[in-house]
Image (cartoon, rainbow, N blue to C red; front, side, top):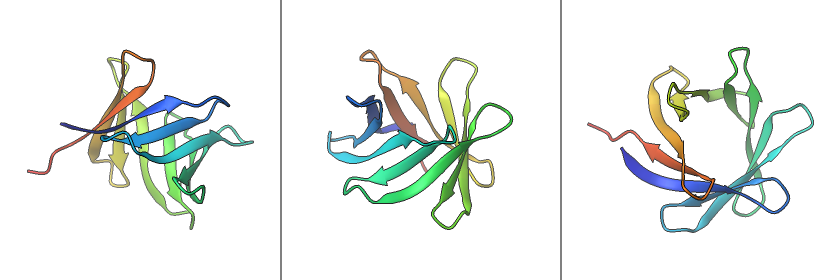
Length: 107
């Protein structure tokens, strides 16, 4: 797997996302219903996530179409899946308390 970026908590509780070069690519903010609203680097809402019954998160685009899901792995990582439940990557907690994002390599 190849590292594609990382995330850190912001000053007001949001999660700020960066690419592998340290450039901000977006942020996620908790919404009223317990899910997350996702914004691009310009502050435009691009997606949202809601909790699923198994304890993970379902991810949706702005049209309400499911784009994937995330589930906690056995070793504490978060596994990411597309809408056909194919694993696309994982996030692992880093030394600084944030999350490092790794994506599956194409074969």
